[in-house]
Length: 86
Image (tube, rainbow, N blue to C red):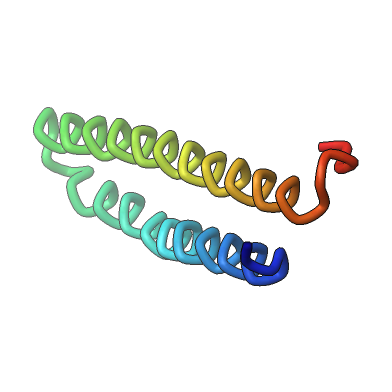
């Protein structure tokens, strides 16, 4: 059984590894959108594809964060026992 603080530190680090690159990569779609804005129909299609990809990645990131939260809750229950209210 690992110490709860080790698990908590690992989960927090995992969340940082998920959300910080997402935050940095969120700057790229508006730049790409401005770059292809004058291309007419092709630019519009590219912008829609970028938006759909961003939504799909957002859903994946939320699911990954949820999985990390469940892992942390299981470790918390393991360390604190059944008295844990969560």
